Length: 187
View (cartoon, rainbow, N blue to C red):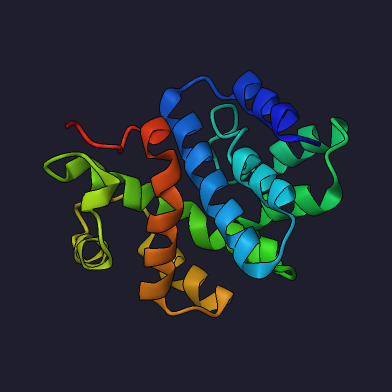
C-alpha cells in the first residue's frame, strides 16, 4: 500500500472536499508523529488518509469504521493499518497497542479542531493559531460543537504527552500542508 493507493481509495469513497481536507490534515499529523516516534511514515500517513474514508457511506457508529475495515481488508490493506483505522473510533473499545494506534486517536479530533480555530482567525491562517487560542476555544462548547474535547485530552494522555505539547506539535505538523487545507491565510 502506497500513498497513491490510499489516496485513490479515499477519493473513490469520499466526495466532499471538507472530509478530504480532514484526511490530509490527519495524514500530516500522523507523518509528524511517525518521525517523532521512529515509525514508518508511509504506514502512519496511510492510516491518516484512510481513517474516515467510509464516513460518507457509513456515518453512524454502528457501521463506521467497521464497514470501512471490511473494504480495506478486501483490498488487501495490511492488518496493522486496518486495526489502527479501527482504533480511531473510541466507541469500539479496542486496545490501542501500538504507537500508531494511539496516534490516530490522538490527532483525529484535534486536527479538525485546530483547523476550525484557524478558520475563525482574522487572516484564516494556521500561523495565527497557538496553544492558548486552541485551549480557549476548547472551553467554548458552542465552538466546533461536534468535536469531542474529551477525545482530545484522552488522546494526549494515551500518547503520554502533555496536552499543550500535543496541541503545539499538531499545529506545527499542519503548517506544511496549510495551503492544501485552506488555512494558509488570506494575505
